[in-house]
Each structure stands twice: as C-alpha cells, then as structure tokens.
Length: 316
Image 1 (cartoon, rainbow, N blue to C red):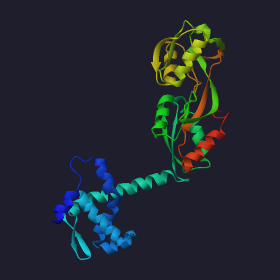
Image 2 (tube, helix red, strand yellow; image 1 turned 120 degrees about the vertical axis):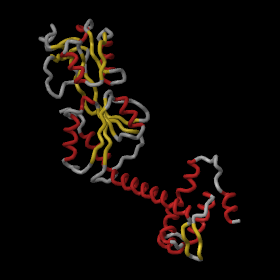
Image 3 (cartoon, helix red, strand yellow; image 1 turned 180 degrees about the horizontal axis):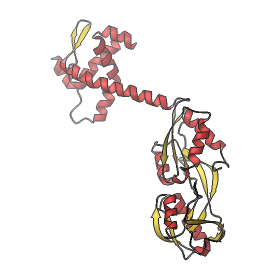
Image 4 (cartoon, rainbow, N blue to C red; image 1 turned 30 degrees about the vertical axis):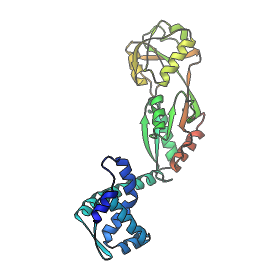
C-alpha cells in the first residue's frame, strides 16, 4: 500500500530530465547525510535542519522517485538495495559539486585567482608577454588562461562567457560591450626585398593600386582596415592569398607573392622591406573590451585596472 501511494506521486516517464533534476537536487545532501548516519535525528543535527524537515524531505524524495530508499526501524534507518545504488551516484554528484565550488572560489581568489584573457595573434610575440610580466610583478600568483584569435572570434567568446577581457582591433562598438582605446599601432606596406619600391622609405598607398596583395581572411580586423584604407586611397585591392597569421603573410611577401599592410614585426624579417605609408594615415587602434554589466572577480578587476593604466604606452 505504501509503495502504491508513492508510485502515484512519482514523475511520469515522459517528464523532462531537467524537471526531475530540479526536484531531486535540493534533497541529495539530505539523503547522503541520512544514509551516512543511518539515523534521522543524528543526521538532522549534523545538517543543522529540523528533524521534521529532514523526514519530510526523505519521504518526498522517495515519492518522487517511486522507490523505497530506506528501511525504517524506529528512529534508525538502513538503505535498501535501491538506496545503496542511488547513494553511489549521489556521492559522485555531490563530490563533483564540491569540486566545482572549490574551482570557482579558487578562480575568484584575489591573490591566486584566474583571468581568461584574449588577444590578437600579432600581439602574442612581445606585447602580451611584456604586459603579463609587468602585471605579475605585483600579482605574482594570479593565473591566466590565454586565447589568441582574431577580433570577431574573441568578441563571441566574451559573449559566451569564455573570456573576461580581450585586446582587439578595431575597438568594438556594441551595446552589450564596454571598450576602451588603449593605443595605436602604425601599419606598414611590406614589399619583397627585390621589389622596385624596396629602396623607398615612404609611399602613398595609391602607388600600389596595381600590385597584388596578400591579406588576412575576411572577419579579421586587420583585413577590414586594409580594405578600408585601400578604398580611401581610391582602389580595391587585388588579393592573391588570404591567411590567418601576419607572419605567414610576411613570408608570402618575401616569396614575391604580393605586398601587404601589416603592423611592425616582433623581429626583423629577412626578404622584405617595410615602408611608411604617408597617405592615407595607416594605423589601427588597439583596445580592451569586456561584457557590459558582467561582474568582475578580484583578479579580473586588478588586471583590467592595470591594462587601463597602460593607455598610450601599451605597445612601448
């Protein structure tokens, strides 16, 4: 009769798994406590809840599952075979919850927490290592999860909660983001070392309207800047190759496969000459972005403050 009454209150087979989880989750720690002590009164004392509350929670848990988890012997209880099976999974689930709680607390620790930080590929050789070195002089134990990607991909990772902050270009303008300009980086026209223009120091972009270009793929901020600058100079670039890395493009230029608009290299690259573009003004803004209204953990707040303090000197 008791089992029939419990069966009547159980969730139907068609109920969503999520609904079952919402019903069971608050009672799992109570169940584990009763299973461990095999005594409702002692479990209530350990869990610091009224005994009546604990008894009702266990009765409702059995009703929702439609299974007897305990055999009752006065004030003491023992697990049924179903209860022992259930306990094994419950203990695993509670251990995973404890692990997750420990992890998020550790990531938010002001001294040893973690920052998920994204940046452009072109900033990975010198700029970002220098920034991290300077920041960790005062915060030696803060950890970083580093992601190199192009601008639009990093913005999507910000929106997905996978990044706390990112250095990107162009500086994004979107209602769900906060962005601050930090610095500016001049772009150069890169030509093969044996190109007729290689002996020049300066050039107007319109002078290479008939050249073949190598560029980053669509979606990259530098590609958009290249297209915009060429348009401003009065032409649409003829593109022979599209890549994902600035240094790969330099290699293509060195091989004589085209010219490119690129930021300065971390180290001089043989086989190319780099010319200052006098018109139009060839530069890209570098900024830091984060989600509007997204609360910062102490380590993220500290690193954000540090980045903003580097305005105008980010690239030096």
